[in-house]
Amino acid sequence: MDYASQVAMTLPEIVLALGALALMLVAAWGGSASTRAVSWTAVAILGGACLALIGPATNGGAAFDGMYRADAFAGFAKVLIYFAAAVAILLAPRFFERTAGENLRPEYPVLILLSAIGMGVMVSAGDLLTLYIGLELQSLAAYVLASFMRQDQRSAEAGLKYFVLGALASGILLYGISLVYGFTGSTMFDEIAGAYAASPLSGDGRSIGLMFGLVFVFAGIAFKISAVPFHMWTPDVYEGAPTPVTAFFASAPKVAAVGLAVRVAIEAMGPAEDQWRQIVIFAALASIIFGAVAAIGQSKIKRLLAYSSINNVGFALIGLAAGTPEGVASVLTYMTIYVIMTLGSFLVVLQMRTPEGQPVETLASLSGLSRTRPWLAAGLAIFMFSLAGIPPLFGFWAKFAVFDAAVRAGLFPLAVIGIAASTIGAYYYLRVVKTMYFDEPTVPFGEGDKLEGGMIAVAAVAVSPLGYLAIPLLSAWSINAAQALF
View 1 (cartoon, rainbow, N blue to C red):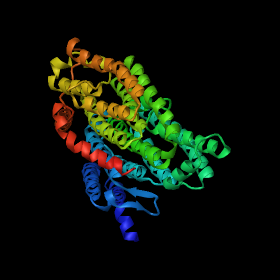
View 2: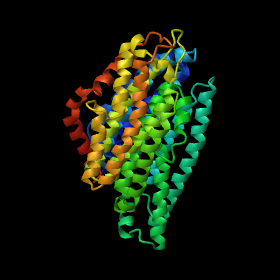
View 3: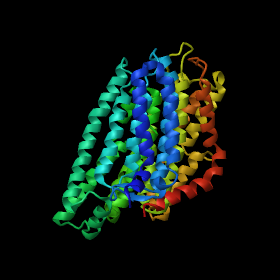
View 4: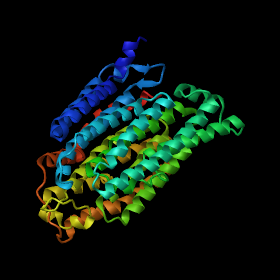
């Protein structure tokens, strides 16, 4: 394959990289006055990256000696990543103007674009070193985004915690990569899979080394998807980071990390399925149960949504545990619906402001919202019911897909436990609805933004029963993307 063809496969990342560099120069020369233009241009660049996925970037195969994969699976994940990144950019200007008392700086959309490049490399990685480069590019931008409000102590604390714990997770992942390389002689996914197939994990020295490498690699990835027991950073970072950044963290990087976990499990360590499945099942059940139980006592909406993200990652991992094309397709379906529900929820959080424009993040402030802002209350109720998986909302289909895949793979006990544990999570979602509709009003909210209100309406319609109309298209797209890994 010639070099031009291989470059064509990486066209989405090239578009984002050139766009980010150009916007960085504009930001340097134009200062804060250029923020609006930089933000809208960044959204257009993300749209251009989506268009660049048409053709070789989605069906080109392996590039650069197998280090980069341009397949349907990566294309599916990138569409979700770019969509969530664009929403995070659109949410930011009014938030910073009202909260920080200053206009948004143009570096924000540039950092989002740089993070999107890293996430694209993550889901297209065919080599452990490519994986690590993408992961670190995404993480370095994320550390800055978490502490973007320099005058806010909580934001600075969130950035520092994220950096320290992220560095620890990177060290764990690198140690796992070194073990895998040491006992396989390669960092390429195909060759690693061959080594696991040739040396079943039966107890000799080589197989023990391979097993430890597998454990450490999955531990490092578990931090990035905030799966239990590597979730400890999530509530503090979600609460302290600016709300548009939190919405970004809860959506785009989550999709990238889950996509990375799926590709590593299926492509690199597929022959060791019996071993990594045990890790995935434990992480799935622990995340579901802990995320549900820990959220019950929360009094702030952003911390509640942080534990909700931990809980939802557990459900997505049930699909991965199946280890089948149907299971991978269910993970992609789940993440698609999860991104819409989560972004919708954070859009409502952005509307939680006093008439003076000060943000309010307590659950108690939602009391009586149905009487003061009925449409906003209806939107949040739809998102809460959908996150709880209550039919006929579209969130029910997401959970049904992963449970169905688990049952088809013979993991009936896992599906039963997951269904039983999901009832715990329903409690705190319903508590939010009860607060809005049955408690007396306390804090009056100010007028909302029309752009945010429009996006809330679109997201609410998408996760309403009307979302079921998209099932044939979503199912066909997800199964086609999943089969690219097998």
